[in-house]
Length: 439
Image 1 (cartoon, rainbow, N blue to C red):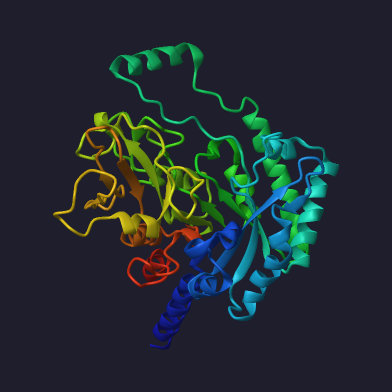
Image 2 (image 1 turned 90 degrees about the horizontal axis):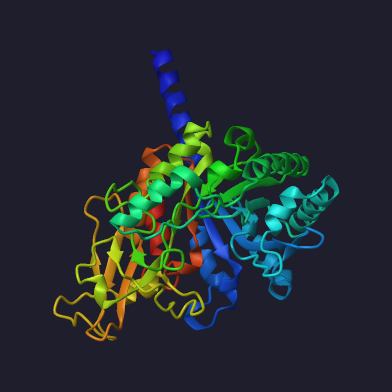
């Protein structure tokens, strides 16, 4: 009887440890602090979210293209904002706050390959990156560094007719697969070596190291999984934006499906299941992987040739729809509150035209995602098709992550969630839904 009780206690204790280790990693794009009006995410609204987050990833830092030192991308805001953010730990003592480098924000037209150049650099130059990282993190009281390196991305899916598909297959007999980086194997070794040195240095001063795999960065090219996983506390797979209107202007499809839908010549790797399987099959501990979920949608312009059903894959699209008011400069991107405000709640509402709402189609299979659309009018104008995860589908993905035994979920990012509660009055509904499905 005593043994039984002891086993029960140990079992409960083990379960509590597993539950306590479940992570909800919240990305915070600091540029949201500079946005105008209702789009500005200030510290007061950020605090509402932090009751749910185990980690806050502050984005983004960059690297100096000449010295390769880690540096702020916006000194005027970061010199004060770093401190404002890390002081939040006083209110949320269990919160870990990381600084992320890269993240598709460190854009440098004069040196587009500087992250590859860092991998290729000599030991002295790489030490500049390591030493400057330690100084910046320690002086601003961050808990660690997140590597979201901007490495070359895989080739977008191309639109082919039946004849074109046959020709593509025939051509590959002679040309092989499309090569993005002819030195990928070398860069994989260099990444492993850099991560090893960086990890040792950070651990020596009690700082964490994590990694973000950006969308469409091919893990097989750059990450020697068995050799690098032990250097990271955890790895966030940004498993979304598989298709976007900028990468795939001529057709619209699910941007972040869980499973492969083997129809219409879809590529088998553009789904969450494939990405997770790759890491697990290459000996990454399941509890080190966090599933990345986007709080925004991708929006295409529809033409008169796109049809009226809205069922993906939608043909003859015309690239990115105008961006929302929140990020007007980002074409084809709509935050969740902007999507929510466009969805019709009236079955008799107009079907076409500038003022017509978009109509939601719910994925009853819970495998691929929801979408909403408005067909183009007779003049070929005002057509819109959006792939997105609403709070309900984000919860489905969080439940999927739990059933897969993953370490947790990473939300990209807080500033695109409805942090003011404009849609339903509930602040951060996507974040709350994810949290409700995690242990």
